[in-house]
Image 1 (cartoon, one colour):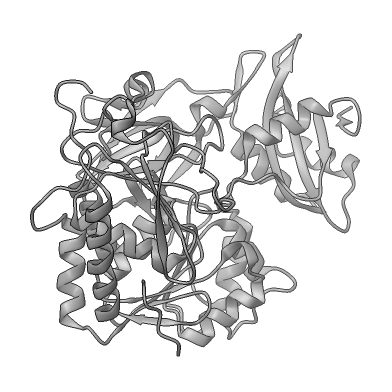
Image 2: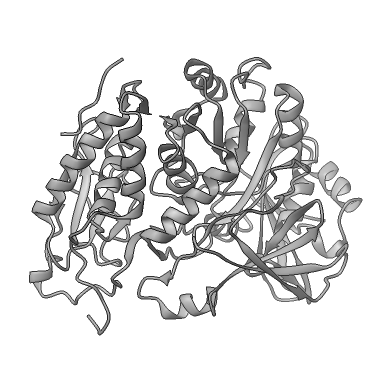
Length: 506
């Protein structure tokens, strides 16, 4: 195989490289790499393999380049689409304790990614060929250019940008210790070893790609196989699993929908897998059951937020859409909420804390105060806490107020997906003069879809106030770059074309 070579206010920090032995993530990686330098660390999308020794050499070289380029007050923006180069720069930045903002690397040449100025980035790392990167100072953003000193604290290391699927993206600020803690705890939950091969088909600038898959694998001595998730089919995904003997995979529900679809994988195609995990969006219980039936392997759901990483994991496999129970290292607090019409059993708002918790949002005190309370993360998610496994009922901000009754979109979406001819669905609330809001559904349809039959089916499953009053058929749901349903775009789709191709309920 080909081998890749990787050619101010009081209390804030000077955000350039700091001297010393390096951050915890780099230090842990270095120990792993020195113990097994010839073991494959990374297999790139083109099939090229980089050993742990080769990756460590590349990281050391990259660290020297960063140290020569970055100075006090600089903030690095990591906007690299190439997985090998991304990992190399990330670990090099950890060695230098360099504040690094993870940005969407799919930018046009000479372009500037969204969020760079908001998070005070002064130097961009961008892709420069397979496995390589270039450093590009941002015009007018250098510390000597008169911009204010960045509001980072001495221990800050990484900034994750939220996906923006329900609102404006925010910058989640984490220390190196928090990253190391979340990675180590989750690697333990997955029981990762050097014998594992982990598939990552997700963007590395997102928590699921870097903190849930790549870093746990590399700090455990496993091999990471990278794939371009946005270019894969179900059978293409299965071929990668078989070719590399993948033992662990984690991805969005849409990936498992492809594997279980008509043109998906065959029963024996995933024989090497010991662990299949779905996360970052709600998993359809029907897809979960079909995966288990076809491949003989439980599809376990994981639940978390980028602010703290993994919170719950269905390790014992309750199934039926359960998120399982809280993982090791995560403390939880359940705050009861008033019962809603039709609600079965008590519901709680979930608060969590642990060593992997971020310190807040960058230069956004209002958003920080809303989510971070006295050392706890207020998830704003409502859960039912069954002893065998918890279930997410929805996020408080996404509940729709229909004449005073709160409707959880997830329950309506699940009911829609169970209807014949409905392949996928997204539910939002839109303004209504009579009832405050009404339920609108955007559906992806297939053979056998009949709107009148869907309405009859839902009438037998849901309460009257939960029924969609407006439908719109579309070829595909709007999605964020990660693959989540983009609910802001769904709502625009309903509002912008209301009365044209929408199907009102009778």
